Length: 474
Image (cartoon, rainbow, N blue to C red; front, side, top):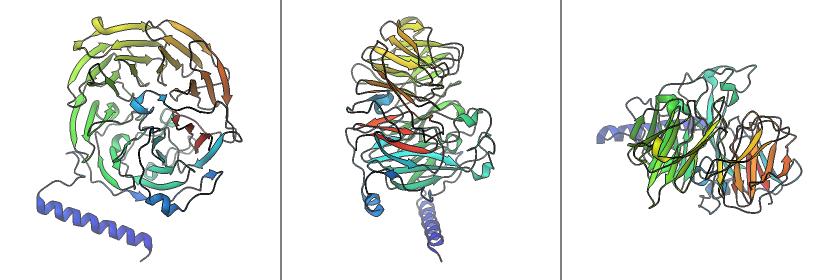
């Protein structure tokens, strides 16, 4: 028996033992996740991609895999970093880069994806897909769709492990809209216990830091021509996801078992990642934007606390908050920005709205920094700066030769980073007076950059459909 068959046989034997134990005890297995759930498959180890391009020699892979990650002050644990705000607490970030300048390493990825990298200690996690829907000209057979989670050493870009996730088919058919982002759009969340991924109707999936799948929970069966996009967020012992596409609900599951904790319906045309908002006194609310309204819920129970009338359009960009005020964008003909105070009860439209402005964006999110709100229009290439207290426009400036911007902006080290899909990244001064510092391109990579950047310990991490880049100083 070869080594691969031996591993499969061992895994099957282990699964049968678990089933037997479960049957004897009368307790559900950790992977019995909901009444609708199909059986969970063990994560499969897949072939690793080619080695990363690195400027320094790599330690043995066995030594890297054995090292458990430790948290650090530079962690980037979820979509848009700490608290989901797009703010990096690091200095020494590069202003300029290219294929020859300030490139620490680049790693070829085994598949495409629009999910962003997350960072925990010296490990980077991100998702990818392959086998179906990679090329608009030849999408292939849906039965060949493969999704995966990668663990990468942040020091040199070497892939430590790569695990495949069982897909529930049929998925949304690859077409003129799905091809814009594909089948790995949601950014993982990570903590000391592991990594939590979301793959639409295939569900939430949890891994430990060694790549062992802990559970997989489906949250709904629906698909959409635009696909799924929202990323999971962590609150205490819960993993919470906006599952509008799959079931029209916010869904929370226990992060240790995968068992559903609560479900709150009423979502409509909502692709944004929920935002945890800290109120004075330390309490939290969870805010999510829908077509026509923003809603605030109790993250512990899912109880709806308040609603506010918002823009009558689908909401893709995720919200940000500062000192209890939430900022929400919309676009595509209804360009608008709304500021509303959290902490109310019932319909707070008349009592808690701070201001509304007729500037917005349809895809990317805003970032709050030092009293101002920054964002860019996804198709017009216009950068905006608004006074966060009043909504007044401080500047409205077209970025030359930037094209479409789907990635959400990042502010760190006094700089504002916008990453375009095809025309590189623009660096601005993070200030209410427009000042462009650089326009950087990685000329050797002609694929699409949809993922939002991450910042950690003086380095930037950019992800395209082909590569993951570490930019900065070694």
